[in-house]
Length: 256
Image (cartoon, rainbow, N blue to C red; front, side, top):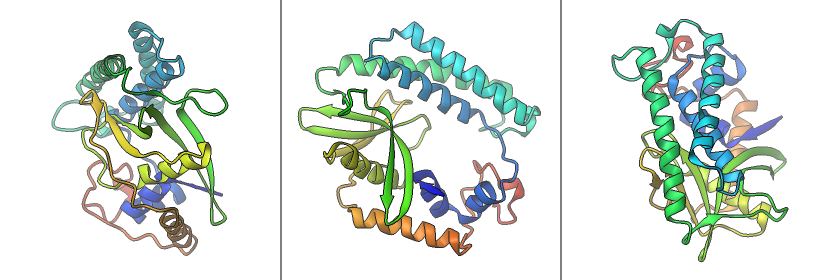
C-alpha cells in the first residue's frame, strides 16, 4: 500500500469524498477540465523532455492526440454528455470546444515564456542525465511509502525551483503539494530548492513564489502519519461546501 500527495490533499479537503473515490470506488462524473489538464501536461512534458527543442506545431500535435485519447476514454465511461460537469449554462459540446482552444493557447504561451526567459532559468538535469520533467519519486515517510511525480525542477543562478504546472483558474489554497515536492527534490538530488511556485498556464507565466520554507521534514512526516492513521481507522470527515466540482457528489449524502 502506498500514499501520495493527491491522497493527502484529498483526505484533508474532504474525507467523505476520499472514501467514496478511493475506497467505495463509486462512479465518478466526467469533466472537460480533466481532458484539458491531461492534454496540456502531456504536451508540455514532451516539450521539456525534448530539451525544449520541440517546435510548436509538433507540440500542438502531441496535445491534440492526448486530448482525443482522454476525451474518448471519458466518453466510454459516460457517453451522456449532459451528465458531465461544466461551468455556466453552456453545453458540454461548447465547453469541450472552448477547452481544447485553451489547450492550444496555453501550450503556445508556455513555449513562448520558456523561450523568452531561457537566460534566467532552465530545466534542471537530474544526476542520471535525464531532464527534470515529470520526475518520479518514492519516499519512506516513517514506514509509509509515498510516491509521486514532480512536474518540473528548474535551475537558476540562485539555485533550484520546484514547480507544478496548473491548468485551472485558481492557485491552490494549500501549499502542501509544493512543500512535499520540495523535500522530494532534496531526497533525489541532495539539494533543497530555495523556491517553489506554480506555472499558471492561463497567465502564461509562473505564480509568485509560494513560501514553503517553514514546512520541515517532521511536518511532512506528521501529515502522512495523520493520513495513514485516519484511513486505517476509517476516519473520513465530510467537509461540504466546495461541492460543485466534486466528481462523487451524486453519491454523497453530504453534498451541498
